[in-house]
Length: 263
Image (cartoon, rainbow, N blue to C red):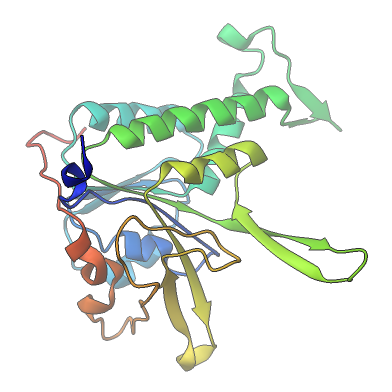
């Protein structure tokens, strides 16, 4: 291969990061359909306010059911009828994996693993964090194999470090998962990482997307995108062109779908 082989438009393979309520899921659902959401957050209702007219958006809620998540991911890895697949969110998917690991302790193949309890409450141990890292690595491998746009949403957590000499406090933000190592590793898999944030208050509130590292949140793009996009919407008078996908679609190809029955 040479660089000429890379000139065709790629599919979108990205991570949307940001605080809750900054529009990650709503903007992910602006991408082409048929669009499917792995709803781990159980928070699809806000999407209805912005995409209620679309009949090509479907979802299943995977609360407490990681095996069901895996079964459907494996199905569409083999026969994928979607142009866009969204996993919402990494944070709750991570929790779901940890809970699956806690529930499996002492059962079946894990019958010799008794788990760890504090005050009678079962808590995560190194084995559970190892399961999270292994499961998320497998999920990422499957997502890379999908022949469609893929978006993984993730929340961020802030930590603060104080310099003992200068007294200066530095804020660092990272993707929120149970284990720190997998949180640092996952973003390296994506071509696109966009940071979502809000500015102002009330009627003057703006919602923005940053496509590059801004010194606080991570960010990157493989395309010549603008550094920032304004995605502010009035839910009572929607403007399609203000959604994220219409503003960046010229940089990406629209994958062809397979004519298969959705499981």
